[in-house]
Image (cartoon, rainbow, N blue to C red; front, side):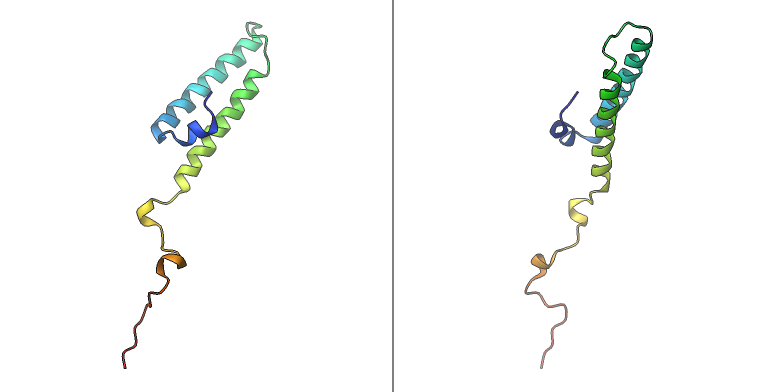
Length: 87
């Protein structure tokens, strides 16, 4: 499992692959606990939390506007007048 910093530094494609692998592993763990092959029953819950973490990072990335499309802030336009009056 990757840390949150590692997830945030990953590309969208890497996140999709990690999500797919985590879902597969959660299914494997759930089946393993039902068939008594895996003793640690908390692993399924840990993978569910990890999946939620990946989805959260993917949503954060999706909601961020591209750098070029960001509107200028007041600090960026300070001292620039929208209309100039000439007398």
